[in-house]
Length: 87
Image 1 (tube, one colour):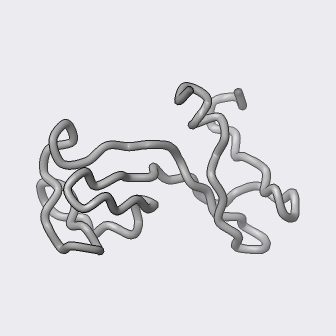
Image 2 (cartoon, rainbow, N blue to C red; image 1 turned 180 degrees about the horizontal axis):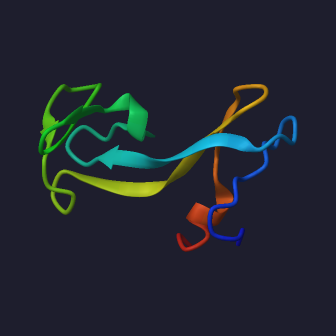
Image 3 (cartoon, rainbow, N blue to C red; image 1 turned 90 degrees about the vertical axis):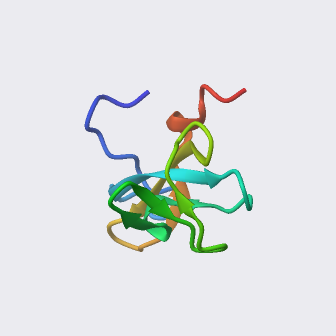
């Protein structure tokens, strides 16, 4: 696992990722996407697919991994170390 604060390397060009964000699964409509796909609201998120509010992490949504975007080629990719516990 990378050191705390270390940025994952892009699997396409090798550059460091410019940002790493959680991947969210909306349990009601099954939409899965990076956190920035969801609108931020005062008490949670709003789903981009069904437009329902996501208020309670235990009932409405869950974080299922992490996504990163490359600082050089702008490719998006899953961060493997964030998924290692999901077996």
